[in-house]
Structure formats: structure tokens, C-alpha cells
Length: 118
Image (tube, rainbow, N blue to C red):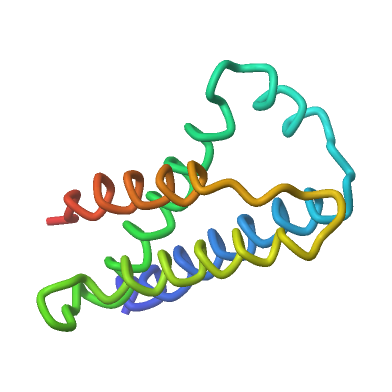
């Protein structure tokens, strides 16, 4: 029972966390954390890889590592979300579309999808 609750709450909680970061950035409300990450060389790319990688890892766990055409479903869903979110930045004045962010998302999702809970 506890495992089933974790499989729901962990990915959902992390999705809410990522969504709150996106909301803050979309509204040009750069708090200390976003400014701090921006001050680190390649901090934005490291952040993309880490956040979307962890999200993929948690969703893969939540979906019991279910695969579709050989790909982990959680990883596919997270990458789809990440790519849509990045393209949405074209229409948000305070944001900037960056193909390298998508590349960082892909690298993070692939690396973290290789991790599997036992």
C-alpha cells in the first residue's frame, strides 16, 4: 500500500514543484534561487537536465517502468512536456526559447531513466 502511495505522490509532487518554477519564470519573478542558478556557468542547462531527469526517474517509477515501443513511458511523457514547455516560451515575453535547453532535457531524461529502483 505504501509503495502505491509513493508511486503517485512522488511524481505528482515533483511535477507541482517544476510547474511552480515554470510559473515563477514565466512571470519574470526571478527569486533568489533562479538568480543563483543563473549565476553558475551552465547552471540553466544543469538545472534543466537535473529537474527533467529527476521528473522522468520518478514518473518511470510511478508507472512501474512501463515501456511503449521500447521506450520508458515516463521518459516519453516528461520529454513531451519539456519540449512543449520550451516551445511555449516563444510566446512569453519574459522567456527565451533555447534548443540547448531541449538538449539538456533530453540528456537528463536519458541519464536518469537509466536509474531504476530495486
